[in-house]
Length: 453
Image (tube, rainbow, N blue to C red; front, side, top):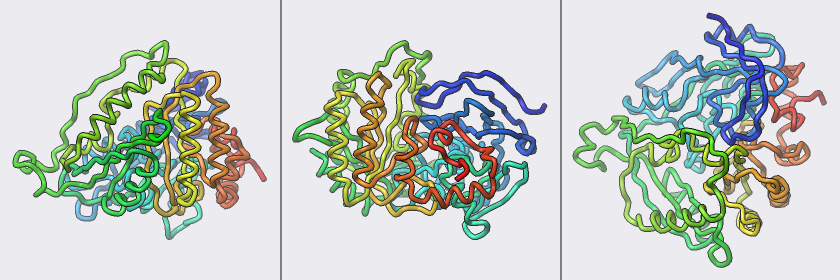
């Protein structure tokens, strides 16, 4: 069959911003990865938000067909699979056997390779770290077509440059992952309302010590004494004896939820200060009423937006950006207050505003998390947005934080260098395995990542 090639293809990531014209190649078999040459970047299912999986002048390598399971150990929960395997597929095959992904982002429509490249984090970072902490081995196809395996103990410099390395050290072809043992496909969850920013930070710090998963939804339009008002959601995997009689008959059964879809790209955004203000008031009231611990399916707990396919289309043709930053524990309260005040003053609405607590920094040289709190905002693109985001960058830098590369579409190279102090160590590894900077993206070119020093 060979490699499929589509030249001059319009391509964007999940935020529909930016939109570029790219040459797209789609290998059908693993061996075809070794035949590729020239400038290229691998792309999974397109759920990064900015330009990390885009390359205007080069080849975008679609990994979706390289999605085979290679080995599954039911006794240990160790899985070896091609990098194009999605978390959805992982759940479909492994959850009925009692195994769950050790770390998951807010969508299951991502690939293992993408999870490694972005070193994704979840609601359990304060307990279990990032995705990369659970990867036992990687296989990479390097710039010259050769294949190399690496792990935390063998060729560890390449391994930790690849974990969170945004696909810039080589094409991740295989991933060996340690899964987490669970007794059911259900979650025990508990909601707490927080009247302001101080209350939500206190709840996350306390609740994070008591529960495996924690996250806060923030009303980003609240101001004054209610600035930062939130609903904190805590949860852990339910044991079989915590389920109802009906659920206990098939505790590990994967039950698909109802699906909806936004059929067309809207000509204008439905997300504005009026619609978000109304939604936020209703959502805060609804979630605050759930004061008792209760059982929910894993899908609604981890992937609430996955039930609406193409939900990104509600932002219209101009698209949106997701701005995600992390602030260190010591400066988080002051920094988050400054960020939220700038956002509310601008009257820009974020339909999705999420706050999570981070644990210790991982070993990935370009990994995003650090001890502290991370805020993620979805904001529609308009004429004045990027000036506002520059102001947010300045606040993040002032408070010692950083911006998440997997969500970025416009950070400056100088800000990046300051935010990621381990970049020089990463650059040294990349120069050794990819001296001609064959693996690059619009993000890496914008940030001068991998350019000869």
